Structure formats: C-alpha cells, structure tokens
Length: 112
Image (cartoon, rainbow, N blue to C red; front, side):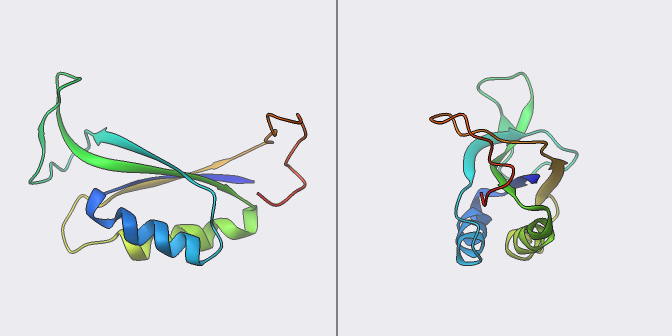
C-alpha cells in the first residue's frame, strides 16, 4: 500500500477532490495547513500561530494500493497545477499495514 500526502493551493482543492473521487479515490483526509516553502504566494501573511510568513495550503492524504498510486499522483498533478509558481508538493510513502479500529482487522489484503 502507498500513502500519498499532497499539499495543494486552496483555489485548486475542489478540482483535485472531485477528480480523485470521480476516478475511484473516495476516501481521503483534508486538513487546512500553512506552508513555509521557498515560494511565497501573493496571499502569504504572517501566521497567527507561528513566528513565520506562510501561504495557505490544503493537505490531502490518501492510502491506496501500490498499482493505483501513480494514477492518483497524475490526477493531483493535472488538477492542482496552475500557471503560477508554488503549486505545492506531493509525497509518496510505503504503508506496511493498516488496521480497522472497530475490528482490529488488518486492511493489508483488502481494498481501501
């Protein structure tokens, strides 16, 4: 299994979510976040929580089967890209296993 973490600009997140969902990636987690990358967006501002200047981003997290990962990445790239610099970043990690909280059963051998 693979975990994908993508940091996407807020004005592109709806397109990313809809495209992922339309292509079978129904389960994902979204979080509002602040980015401190090298590129500072026009809307960058001093953070209320940290002593930095930040740009707003949305973190999308999803877990999928190994053979589905490239498709999800391609969807995020296609729908998250803008003509401007600083569109975000995608991280890909291996997941050894996942467990359902209610039953304690491993999801390693099942569809996620």
